[in-house]
Image (cartoon, rainbow, N blue to C red; front, side, top):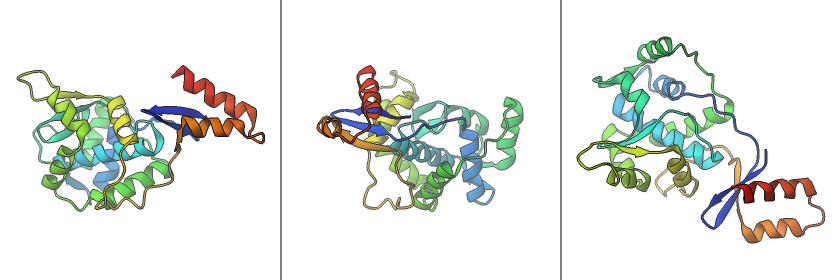
Length: 218
């Protein structure tokens, strides 16, 4: 599929269709396995945030469909929080119990998603839970949602749309070793660049028509 994702004055050309059947529990399983079978729940939540975020950065799509919230210790996936409520560590048996309760089979991640998780683990897996809480507190998408929470509450809505928009415009910081991320599925394209594409006689016309149709339908 070809499309253009608006990002302020920047558009992104979508190179191919992205199919998401993955759940947060599939991602959690992968991360727990990388951690040797057990992981602190706070750390797991933050790694899920960065896995979702960098996948969104590369694809313009959600990695999974579960719900994020802005909470005191940073972003949290609600369904995962319910699964490990009151526990300091999460393990594979906890995830398996959730699968049985939800009657949900494990989705084996494709090579692209696996590469994203590998890069996220390489960049953040060695950090402590406290380190990751502090890092996520620096992310404006969490900060904005936290500040916008209802008065007197400890939870703000952190929508997938906001997360995707934020990470589409986010670039790795100098101390974030994310060189292992796979190639992006979306490319930045300004309105001027799109016009230049259209002006080239060799461009396949249906391609241009598809880009324009998606752009103006957005």
